[in-house]
Image (cartoon, rainbow, N blue to C red; front, side, top):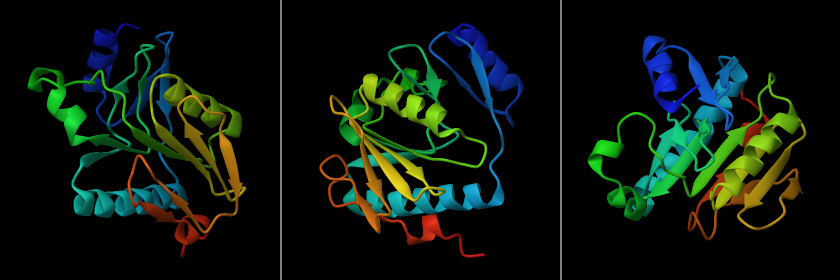
Length: 182
């Protein structure tokens, strides 16, 4: 499916969550469970509070599609882009799906995700220029840290994960991600 066809499909079905892979195939993303939605919200809130205080960039939620250099259109659970990079983008390109690689992305594995599929998505982000990526796996209590040009690092049962140097000073506490409070 072409970029334009995919955009029209998304306009026709605004309540659907979809991505397009690098081959043009459309992937329909199931709605989040109560626990997954809560985890994603907690991540977004922490990142948003940090970004507001830091002031050097903007956060985006899972409804934002980014077109990567390989042609895939992906919607990470959370993303961050520096204001410097955003200011370089013409306003006319801010509509639809921006051809823009976030500096940071995060995915929280949900019940419907296979670990291998989410790991492949994280490799795709890294291969396309994302500087820092976190795959948070609440079922194994692991964080897979992806950095451009490096092999992923898996951290078992961390209490927090640090965003330095991409997200200077950002620490994501994981207690509430591991243990949903209801």
